Image (cartoon, rainbow, N blue to C red; front, side):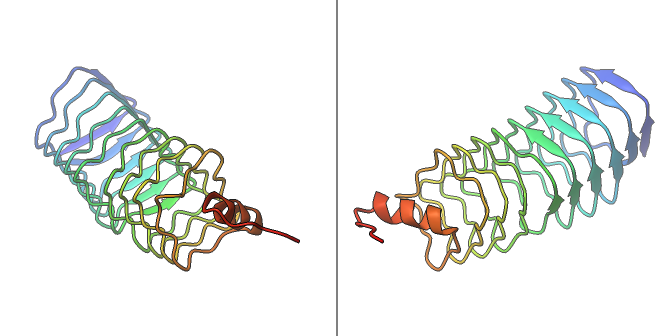
Length: 200
C-alpha cells in the first residue's frame, strides 16, 4: 500500500498499486494502470498526462485534485466523491460514472461520449466544450452547470433540470429533451431552432 505526502514523480509506473492516501503530491507522465484507489483520501494532488486505465476509485474522496489530460479508459468510480476536483481534457471511454458524486467540479474539454450519466447531481459542474455525443443525461440535475459549446448531438436530456444552466453555443437540434426543464429564454431559442415562431 502506498501513501504519498508532498511527493513528486515523473514517468513512474504504479501498475496495480494500492493507494490509500495522497496529499499535496504531483505526478507527471505516470502510469496507474489497474491501480486501486478504493476508499483512498486524495487531497490537493496534481496529475498531468497520467494513465489510469482500468483503475478503481470506488468510494474514494478526491478533494481539490487536478487531472490534466488523464486517460480514465475503463476506470471505475463507484460511489466516488469529487469535491472541487478539476478533470481537464480527460478521456473517459468505457468508464463507469453512474454513481459518482461531485461538488463544484470542472470537467471541461473532456471526452464523455456515450457515457451513462443518468440521475446524477451535476449542479454547477463545468462542462465547457466537453464532448457529450450520445451521452445519457436523463433525469440528471444540471442546474447552474456551464455547458458552453459542449457537444450534445444525439444525447438524451429527457427529464433533466437545466434551469440556470449556461448553454452558450450549444446545438440542441439533435438532442432529446422530452420533459427537460429550461429557463424561458433557452426554451424560446430551442423552439426557434426547430422552426417555431415565438410571439408575445
